[in-house]
Amino acid sequence: MAARLSAPGGAFAIPQNAEINVTPFVDVMLVLLIIFMVAIPAATVSVKVDLPQAAASPAPTLPPTYVSLQQDGGLYIGDTPTTLGALPADLARTLASAHPHAERIYIRADRGVRYGDFMTVMNTLKADGYERVALVSEAL
Image: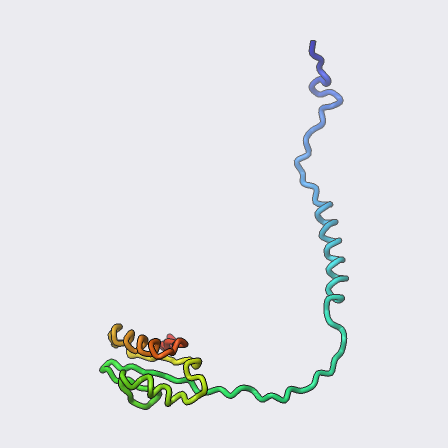
């Protein structure tokens, strides 16, 4: 035999509350705000130190080295003409530093240069150990 605990509309008929209670959320946010307001000033360094001046001078910057390739096949290092066979030796002479292969080489090429000619110059530089090669374009 079954028993019914409440009748419809009786003492236990409580309507559902569909509202979200944001009070706990606001309480947690206020507590976190207070914690951060107290903790942030403690995280900064407040010890005053009179630091000495550095005696080292800034490292000298060398002018960039440009390898230019013209549409008619002309090859230049800066303003000095060169050939594809003499490119590595002329480039090493132009750089004249202790580590010439560590310096960046900028390649400029005319718009009409054949891709194969451009890649030949790139491959020549790579074969001679110049790994830091950048391409130059004109900004719009």
